[in-house]
Length: 131
Image (cartoon, rainbow, N blue to C red; front, side):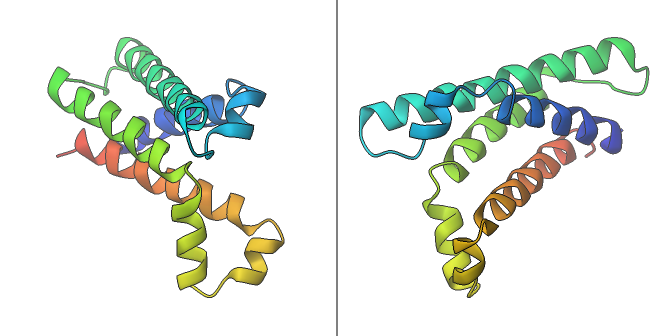
């Protein structure tokens, strides 16, 4: 069941991060102040909704996908919180500095580290259904 859940969450993540993310969210989700937090929270909420829909569709159509309310709620909370945290951008910048990746960061590497962090968070969420 882990692989099916992980794939559903990954597809939902890609939808929320690209076609469902507004230009305003993309431009302002890391800004300081109210506007930045509103953009960030709206984007994180998009992830929660898209992942919730993907999980519900998966539970409906895939016989091996069984969901219970508690783990599903915790997983969706984790997805929203972790996504919002990562998208403040400073965690990725801090990691790249610690990992001595400043040149790579200047040449587009931050987007790859960002997506890797999101996929790791999704894998943790998928594990919540497998234990």
